[in-house]
Length: 414
Ligand SMILES: Cc1ncc(COP(=O)(O)O)c(C=O)c1O
Image 1: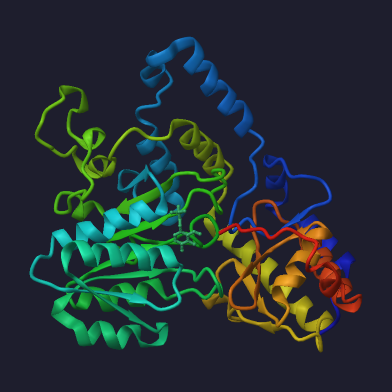
Image 2: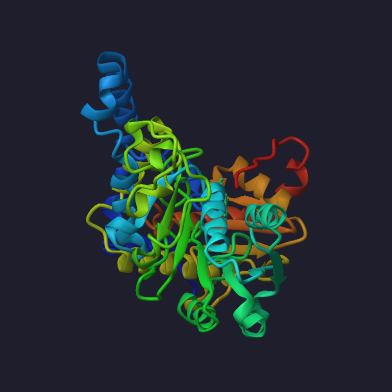
């Protein structure tokens, strides 16, 4: 392969149909941000939206809930997320956090299948998913079977009619490896069980077709590729056909048919609305609305195409420029198996990430020995990828990672 020059990358940027979308973000100068898979960048429109919400609060007080359309924001923003994940508008709702959304999805699945006993999940998943399933197991007595990814289909078949649900994260947070959603959902359905996907590292970066794959339930993160801001609320997708069969296991007043009737009995609201529990964190929810608005007018197909082009460019440059420096590409090289990040394993991964941060290149470190780089197609340029690898090359040549270790604060984004 011919070596890729910075000028080649400038040409790619000049031809990039998504290049203009970068202007929707307020990015700090002298920073190459390769951590939008952990905390998305600030949309330019967010500060004014928050300021407006505060003004509504100050001036209109409680009247703002209706006048500023706050009350309907969970379903309004859910409907904006729906086309990004291949769901219908009335199948998605914005609620507390991915962790809580997963509890609601998995516990609802347990409640509606009292004659089944097992949930299957995968080893090496983001810890919160395992913790939540453990809590559900302790509360309900169901068994959680944690298996390696390559054994999933075999295990699903073997549990068969005793299977309640399969809970998987579509793109692995550590390696960026992506499951085959259609195949695993179909295998799960053959046993009559429900399929629940965690889309934390997929929504807004990967083309998804939840309805085309027949997915039952899904959850996803608002603060990563959806750019909703720190601690942004999450989303829950429940397929229309299941909305009346499943029940919110954390039923609360705002998920009832008529919250202001103040009825003592919990009578669920119709459809997806029953999965709301209490009052939404309105400022965060409005920030998420601005985050999701950064996708206006974009097709996920073109977003995915750019994401793959960026991550492939990064891998090609690592191959060309970092050979002999001890890096192993820990993410799949195959496009159909790679999400929107590239993880490099290296003995000094933590120190190398810190040295890059000093140079203004922000990636992150994950145990064990993984340097993780996220590629957010909405605001990254091809030259950013080239410059990042160039910095990495200089860090290695100058052995900066050994000098800097003790001096630099550790970042702990998720
Ligand atoms: C796969 C996955 N699921 C869930 C979460 C947690 O999401 P939340 O903080 O919204 O509960 C994360 C956070 O990084 C994650 O990577």
